[in-house]
Amino acid sequence: MTMQQPATRPANPRFSSGPCAKPPTFELSKLADATLGRSHRAAVGKDKLKAAIEGTREILGIPADYRIGIVPASDTGAVEMAMWNMLGARGAEMLAWESFGSGWVTDVVKQLKLDAVVKTADYGEIVDLASVDFANDVVFTWNGTTSGVRVPDGDWIPADREGLTICDATSAAFAMDLPWDKLDVTTFSWQKVLGGEAAHGMLILSPRAVERLESYTPAWPLPKIFRLTKGGKLIDGVFKGETINTPSMLAVEDYLFALDWARSVGGLKGLIGRADANTGAVADFVKRNDWIDFLAQDPATLSNTSVCLKFTDERIKDGAAFAKAVVKRLEAEGVAYDVGAYRDAPAGLRIWCGGTVETADVEALLPWIDWAFHEEIDAQV
Image 1 (tube, rainbow, N blue to C red):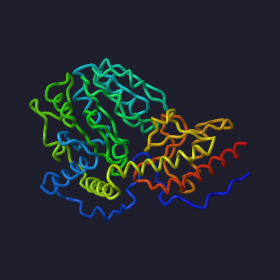
Image 2 (cartoon, rainbow, N blue to C red; image 1 turned 90 degrees about the vertical axis):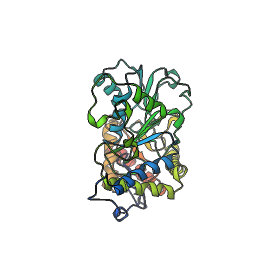
Image 3 (cartoon, one colour; image 1 turned 90 degrees about the horizontal axis):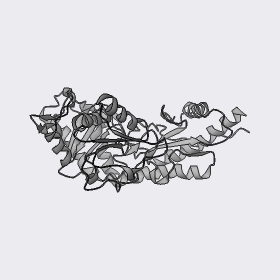
Image 4 (cartoon, rainbow, N blue to C red; image 1 turned 180 degrees about the horizontal axis):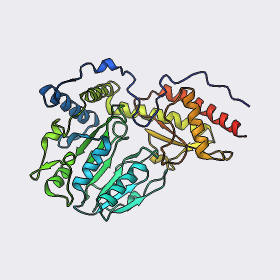
């Protein structure tokens, strides 16, 4: 029996997990003050870059003695800079439970050729955090963007650790309360939780990380774009807005707008509340329907940004084809764009629930998922 289409559509059907939805109040005219055609090294450019750094510190509550730098190549560039500059001083332990974490494992083991301890878990699960040896440097993602699984908190990281923690927090920053005293290197990109523009990464260093940079020289050569020290000292200007390469001042202006919007909704607390409300709407939907479930196995590890879902109905013969067909129906109706699972992840849906998404749009989307599911089930029978 054909199911009637829902009467309400999301006002904004953009639920991509990256680049993510712009803040609800975004208009191109809001970027009119961008310092286009000016040097980023001019006073006006430096002021903009410094405002981006200090705005990040303010909203995320980053300690005053932590360094914050704007670096090239998005979150990927920031993570690579950290690994290539700091790993090798002691043992390394790599934790991975999704695609991007697995990518860092590949780079450390195959490119840097370190004899690292590698701990992995399947999509939907997480590694045994209690087994991690913090005599080593530990590299991990806070939130698995492609698996919908996050670490539950920072309690598993000891205050008296010997090694450094290097945390890819790209889909966690601005949506989760990060314990800065437990994180030595933290990275994220502008195009995730605040919906900024791509290609710029943020690299946040604790005093312990700075000490490592100034006391250790890796055995491998470092490309210019990766270098954070000169003559054994931190290149301090990188953390005051003097970027390694030329940044897009239009993207900088967009990030400044996003930071202002974040302040308008209550800063970090408000952003977390918005993401939690969005994920809560999805959780209620999952409870009401026995044919769909979260990919995350443990509710304590459920992401509140990149929410991954799987179809569980026994009538589904080909999970990948079924999920693709549902995604195609949703896009054709203009109610959800880019909600298919990541290419390396199990078949299903991935709905971005970060703070730039309105809860009313999530609530409007869910009946459409119900409709698309039943349309495909009927077409299959």
